[in-house]
Image (tube, rainbow, N blue to C red):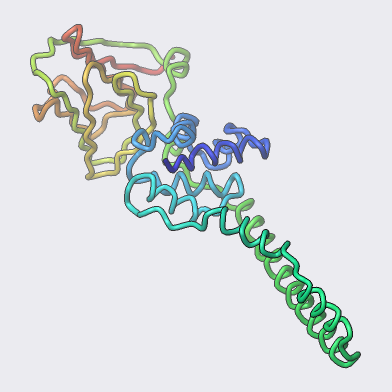
Length: 279
């Protein structure tokens, strides 16, 4: 299996690069970075999977195009490229070690070449070395310019523009002003569809999966399926509509403050909690 994401994690650890550092530079959430290193790409926002992995690869000094190729192979979008087996390399080295009397004689003959031929070879070698040094200089210059560009340019975060609302922030900066519960009347399979006429940040956790931060663009919709539970935390709900198995959840109010939406299948409950800033 093409477990390339494990190699990425190993490279990051070998270079001593902390996930927290990558998070601060790229503004990609820690939960998304953990998902990349575990190969759980279905937990990432579909729109930003390739963008996140490219940014992660750049931060640990790996060719992003090669990583994206490996991602396509892993997801089944591209066939695994054919690679030479190591046996061919070993056979080549074995053949180089073989030496016959005729080969030794030829070696002696070559060593007796004229000084003109030797001088010509030296000039050619110097030219090749000079060319390689010039190419190396160009590559180093390009890498330096790229490093300077990356240092001056920070990635625009889709998640920190409006500021993520963590549970700690809710506890410390907000109070729960209302909580409404109603009976879950629909049956499996369960799905939640989100639509909005304004750009919206939210955090979602379904069943036993890790929570993930996502952005719902204005005029777009996101569909999430779950089996036993779903927990969604919105930083605001202006212009937001929720549909449970295709039916509108009318108890959801439009508000500029955070709202938490929870469904528990075992308890057969749908809960909506509204928050307001502490005065």
